[in-house]
Image (cartoon, rainbow, N blue to C red; front, side):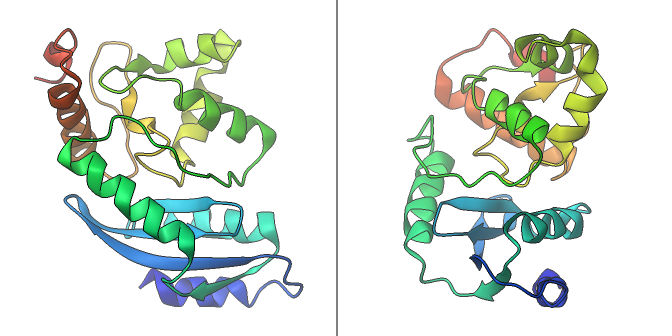
Length: 196
C-alpha cells in the first residue's frame, strides 16, 4: 500500500540529488518499512502506521530525491543483523549509520532520544528538561511523533508523567511489548511496575 504511495510522492519532485532505497523487513511486531540513503538509515517504521505518508513526504523533501525499491543496499544487511540481535535480546544498543532528515529541532529531539538507556524510560517533561527547555513539552512530544526510525531512535521509551503509556505511532501494544522486552533483557526491574 505505501510502496505505491511512495512512488507517487517521488514524482512530485523534479531534481534528484539522493536516492532512497526501500525494503520491507519482517519483525516480531509486524512488517516494517526500511529506507536508506548512502549516508545511512533514514526510515525504519511500522509499515501501516497512520503518519507514514507524512514521514515519507518529509524525507523526500529533505533529500529532494526519489525512492527506489531495492533491497541490495549494504546498509540493509547491517540493519537486519542488528535488529535480529535486538529482538533476540542479544543487542542492547545499535551501531548504525543514521541519516536524520527533519528540522533542526526534530533532529535535536531524536538525538536526545538516543540518550535514554536501554531498559529505562523518561517522561516527556524529563525529555524536555534534558533538551534544555522544560516548557517545550508539546513540541518535544510532536517531534517524537514525527520520528520515522522506530526502535533505533527509541521514542517508545518516553512515557506519561503518571507512568502510563501514552501515544506511540506503532500502537500502544507495540510500545508495551518493546518496554517489557527491554526490561527483561536489561536486568533492570525498578520500572516494571509502571507498565503493569
